[in-house]
Image 1 (cartoon, rainbow, N blue to C red):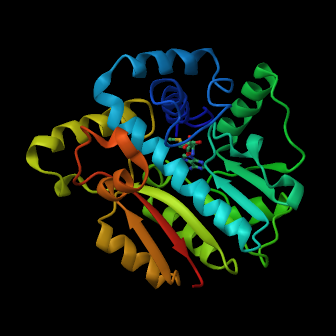
Image 2 (cartoon, rainbow, N blue to C red):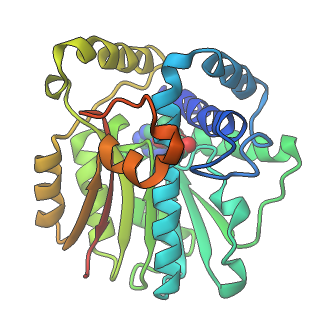
Image 3 (cartoon, rainbow, N blue to C red):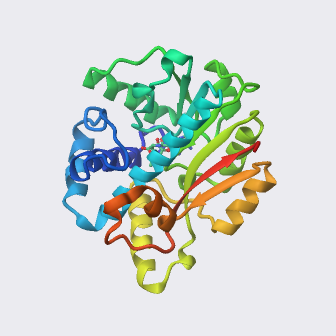
Length: 281
Ligand SMILES: C[S@@+](CC[C@H](N)C(=O)[O-])C[C@H]1O[C@@H](n2cnc3c(N)ncnc32)[C@H](O)[C@@H]1O
């Protein structure tokens, strides 16, 4: 992160979700606020991304990770979870759509303070009201305590919770990833969905240059990739922290489960993964 600046990659992720609504009809992930929440710069980013067909696989991945997360969130609510924590929320809109608010489901959005301030401005400019079920908790994962930030916002660490943590882990140091997982593992009956990227050496030579170029472009925007994980290593890490159920979907698993007819032309192999981990089975 550039000190004191809102995340630029958050703008990109939101732009991809907006394009998924128009180009793919929101088939994988429907988000009625995806366009409205974009500010002028995010709309420009959206138009630039939409003009580049090579970015289609990334768009489908970003739609699928949200779908996998919100499907898991729904299952958590069905089993009685009433606290939802969106870590590194960016311009994610679940808190605006929360269909479980009437059942007492509270949403805590945690983000880098400058990103969160920018989101709040974007909401105000778009005329989108902040629901009473949403509480903001500004926290820098590298420098501040997630537990303290959440508890100051009213989060109850002795009650079950679902954590959505999308598009964030790769931008954090391994220490920050580990301490975040430790915190989640300490919350009873907690469940988390997050995504990660594989190390460059896992890619075949012909794809390595492409993935390295994507990483370089994130670094050029001040948000370098700091943590990459091999799938086997990550599962071991999660189990060592007490997560007894671990479900890891790579591109093949995601496209099989969520892409439907859109999976045509998608190349499977190493790439992004989305993981669901639960600390009690
Ligand atoms: C690629 S964006 C993803 C945003 C959102 N989850 C989404 O999928 O649209 C990365 C997010 O991680 C947050 N982030 C990165 N480093 C952080 C840190 N050290 N502390 C808190 N948040 C951080 C950024 O502010 C940003 O919201």
